Length: 95
Image (cartoon, rainbow, N blue to C red; front, side, top):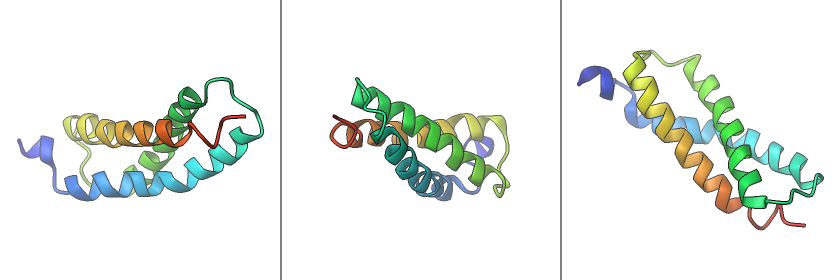
């Protein structure tokens, strides 16, 4: 159970989305010029990309590196970012 929870579980769930905000805004600005046909799907893909960048930043400083911790916490943080970006991208990415 200690491998699943880790020592930084709450910190991980806060920091990965926080580190993803900057890349997500930059990606939205870049995608806004492209006039996407499916804005919610485009927002979800942008969120997936931004959460990958945020998780990479976090992983470079995290001590909890068990596969169980990474597989559950990082995936859950990524899911949160993807859902938020999908709903947030609906209006600003529409043309």
